[in-house]
Length: 275
Image (cartoon, rainbow, N blue to C red; front, top):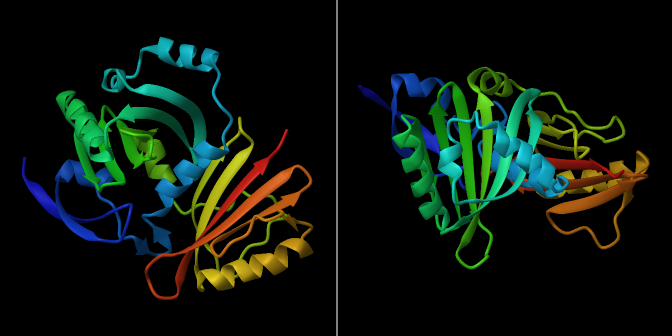
């Protein structure tokens, strides 16, 4: 099969690399520019990790029912990995499943092992990895599977985040989202929403937007607007890149990071309602 060369952007940075993609693969596998029309390639890994951290621990019963299905053709790929968490969620309003695993080895070794296993099943797969973080995309049997592997400093172990969607849901999740946060959460002027993840079970939502402002200006805005909207700052919870606010049973984390493009910032809003 002939291949075409496309630009691909690292999730962990904004470095460009040349990678080969087949014509069929390009329809779902080609990563877009890191910042184009307000979308950021760095946002998805950040909010996947945040969604996992915000979510409640899965029970043994959930894992047993998940394993018992046996309908996932890539289940054999995960044999030997330590399942830590599994949940259904919405990504930009489209259905998605996320799983978290503990894996032996560095991110590059874990991805090398997983990609080889997927390819043995006939998948089209691609990955990029650094010392501390790696990511991959897999197309198999009408499924789009995105992998993020992070070194969590656990002596030879890495954490794997696996996001699994049908091709139809993947296509829907690429459409610009609307914010799914409580009305009481202020919106920074000119925000362009890029990603939202909603986990109903854990009562948590993670939303990201890009804005034309520096991170300091964004945090200064929320420091003033949140109290006016009835939110109180968490004690000792603020630094130069983030702040935490409380309103009744609602918690909100605001973080701001430069995109690397002059004057553009990624704003990350993590909301959780306590039971």
